[in-house]
Length: 226
Image 1 (cartoon, helix red, strand yellow):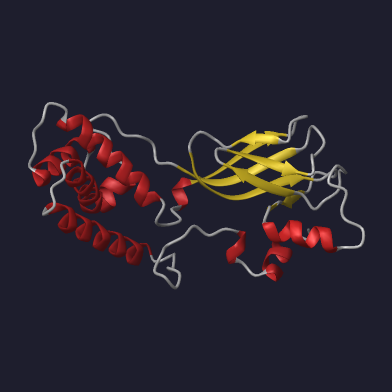
Image 2: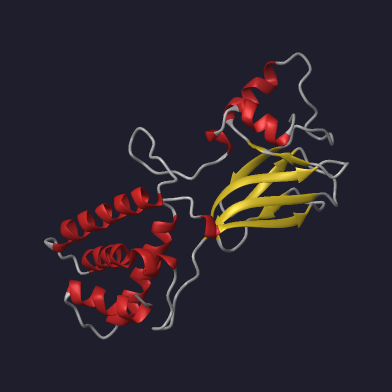
């Protein structure tokens, strides 16, 4: 299925032909593709980006960021160190030790504080170090009728149902909203079963895998002591 065919399918299901119908249908489809991308660790969306530390300890995430996975910083010998996310527990433990760490010193462990579309490294690393970001990117926005991608090719029906659900919400169609939502959710479950590489948590919510999903011993074996 290509983008143009998907647009027509969405409009057929919502049964609407307003003056801006096609424009909105394209928006619903692209937003649905992005939503589907958050349901599974799709390998083709995995991306690695690098940056160099500066006098500022705040750095922007890439514009195409969908969700971050891991952030590394090179030590003085050029070896990558995994940076753990800053948590309230980290601060609580820090103030309990007899000699608290000097947060202004150039000594690990570094921590990263996530702040919307940017992140901050604490303590301030020296300039010239390499930052490596592992993340999942957003799928590219489709615009032309002949455009297609993995989601439309493999899970086109699910994408259409998700877009139709958004359309029904936009049109406030109370009869179609639950119907399209159920079809979309069933499609997501089928997709996950087919991909067969990700498990849901106890609440049935599918999440991205981060360093929290791995035992500490595994992380130390892979990345060394940090």
